[in-house]
Image (cartoon, rainbow, N blue to C red):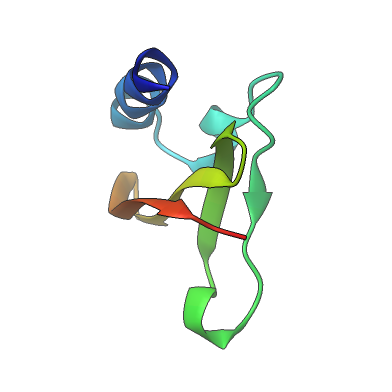
Length: 68
């Protein structure tokens, strides 16, 4: 799990929009609900996801969570 998460964090540091995280097998998708408006998620493994939001060209509110 750590190599995948590390690769995702490095990529997130390089990209300037959520679409930059749209790589095969990562399952980028916007989150639903008032609390997570503007947040996105990528799949790490099992129920674990990395969630984030962009403010301009910077990723903010990055989290690693058991999303489901």
